[in-house]
Image (cartoon, rainbow, N blue to C red; front, side):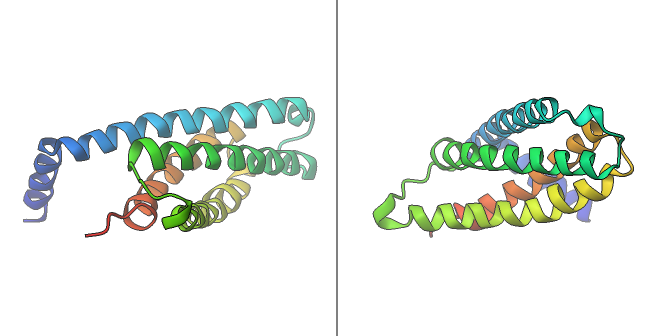
Length: 158
């Protein structure tokens, strides 16, 4: 019964052109946001010499976390503007709620950062190579952030 409902929902989604556009554009800009995040992270871990420290050492973890934080800030700004204008097509301006959207967006991203990037990243950094850990965290963050953006930040008023 539940599988049948899920199949019906997937079929309905595939026939809804606006939802398909939104998902496609979200994935496209999500990939770009991830590339921005990875580029900044890789650049900083290289410049700061992360590979010169033993995996799991205090310096290794510190460089990983600082690089991750800076990459996060840059990618959140990029994601807000692309999500607002191209994915969810929000027309709110400074006068009618754009600052609220920005605050909600950043709040949702801070929550995902605390849960996934900072919490799980640091925990997993002791277990997994930092590149594998980064991929896992990015997948979890994309799912969480889409749901937060769709259901809270850029929720359409009816």
